[in-house]
Length: 399
Image 1 (spheres, helix red, strand yellow):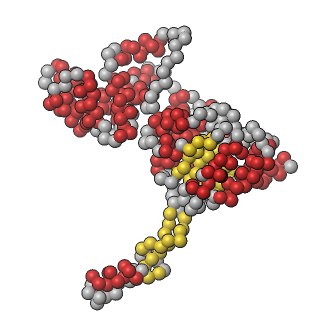
Image 2 (cartoon, rainbow, N blue to C red; image 1 turned 90 degrees about the horizontal axis):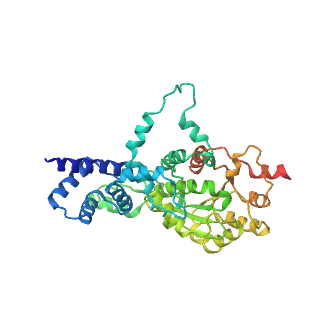
Image 3 (cartoon, rainbow, N blue to C red; image 1 turned 180 degrees about the vertical axis):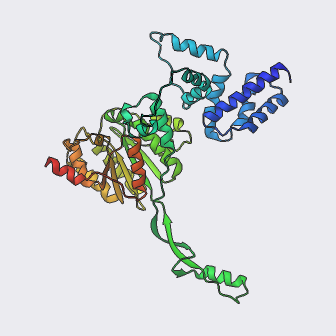
């Protein structure tokens, strides 16, 4: 193999490793197939080179965005030099950079991981035997106080959260070995196979089904420090559970269920942002709940649905309408859980009028400000006992 072929092999191998680090299922065999395809196809231009690698590495539709960004960054001329120069030069006045496509940041980190690793190895080492583990600190640290690196680690931990199956018994019956009713149809079929000499009884038992989870997430300005991580949590839950419906609200209600179902988390969040026009604006909880109760409640709150209301309760126009809509929402679902990031404060009191209007109508009140509180929520949704706040006790404190 000539020197040019050797360089090509090294580049393809490193490119495959970058794709795997970015989340694509690319193994050594795919790298060998890509190299062989390039040699056999006799590529003549950049476009043919792109689509040849695309045909080998991309196996799922949602991976096309990651591959496209990786290819454009990796195979451009003087890419590494331009990146270092851009980091040292100040921004040009009057120039507004274009926002990167979904997944671009993850691709950048994967491609330049070697440079970051060398920088880490050059740091001074210290004795950490008497310090608390980083993971334990990360679990209890408030989302609003995290750095960019800690937020990236938190997103990875959120993606690993598995929502247990909280199954409910339905009226329908299904075949079961421990059933209490005889299934005549299956019993007769089994007996006919044996020539009707032996009657093999078959039984029917209760059918279990997962209840739907409906999330109503506040994206107003007061919730801006938490919204992105909450969306990552809802994306992780949606990815592992089919019956999850997600709504975002600030001054109006927006259904982003289809957008958040994208496989790639960056692409899902970008799609949600494109659908919402009132991001980081005011808060109109009563108006949004009225829209939900009127247009969506009958469609999504059947079969024992669980509602997750994620908001701080700081309503702009708090009046009797909010209490009425909360009561209507509570009567339409099996379980209403209010997740409030303000509960991170030790001396939290229900002083706000909107909070006092909402408290009497919720089944559970939980904090949602760090990884530990998210883990407790996952346990609570599975039916396991988990500590929560008493809404009535908070009301009695300010009475």
